[in-house]
Amino acid sequence: MSKKLQGQIALVVGGASGIGRAIAECFHAEGATVAVADYNLDACREWTSTLEARVSTHRVDVADEKTVKVMVDEVINTHRAIDVLVNCAGILDETPLLEMSTENFDRMISINLRGVFLVSRQVAPHMVERKRGRIINIASQLALKGGVGLTHYCSAKAGVLGLTKAMARELAPYGVLTNAIAPGPILTPMLQGLSSQWIADKEAELPLGRFGKAEEVAPTALMLAASPDGDLYVGQTLGPNSGDVM
Picture (cartoon, rainbow, N blue to C red):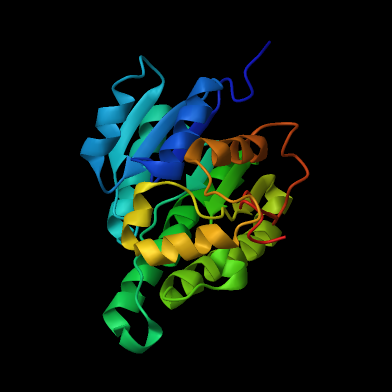
C-alpha cells in the first residue's frame, strides 16, 4: 500500500515540538521529505536526528521578514520544491486585558499572525508557478469562542482564520488549496504559558473531559495535505477540539 505523501516535500514551520513536531513526524512516516523550521534549531535537530533520511532542519524567526525569505529559499534550494506548507509557529501567555501592554499584544500578533502571512507570502508564488500546493494554517478553537486572559492570542488566531479564507479564494484557481486547523487545548509545551487554574477550568468545560494530544491533531493535517483526501477542502477550518466548539 502506497504512503499518502510519497514523493512530496513538506515544510513544517514551528516543528521543534508540540503539534508541529507531531505533524512533521506524521508526514515523514507517510513518505514525505520534511523540512522542519523553527526558532529553536537545536530542538529541531535533536528530534530529527532519529530519522534516517528525507529530513532537513532550518532556523527561522517568523516575525522577521528577512529570515523567513532566507529559510524558504534554503528549503527550495535543498529540496527543489515545496508541495505542502504547515504554519504552526506560535507563542502563548496568559495576560488579562487590563494588564496587557502594547508590546505584549504586538509580539503575539507578530509571531502568531504576521508570521503566517510572511511565510505564506514567500511560499505561495512558488506553488502558484507550479500550479499545485497545500497550505495548512494552525489556528485555535479560541479564535471562535474567545478565552479569558487571552485577548491577544484569540485576536491573532482569529486573524489566521480570516487570512486562511482570503488566501484560499486567491490561490485556489492556481491549484493551491489553503485550509486551517483550529485545535482545542492540546498537551504541548505551550501550556506552560497558562496558569493551573486556567487549565483546570478549561478541562472541566470539555465534553470529552480531557485535553488532546499532538498526535491526535496530526491526522487532520495529513488528510488536508493528501490527495484525494483533501482535494475538496478550500478555505475550511477543521476542529479537533474535544468538543469545545461544535
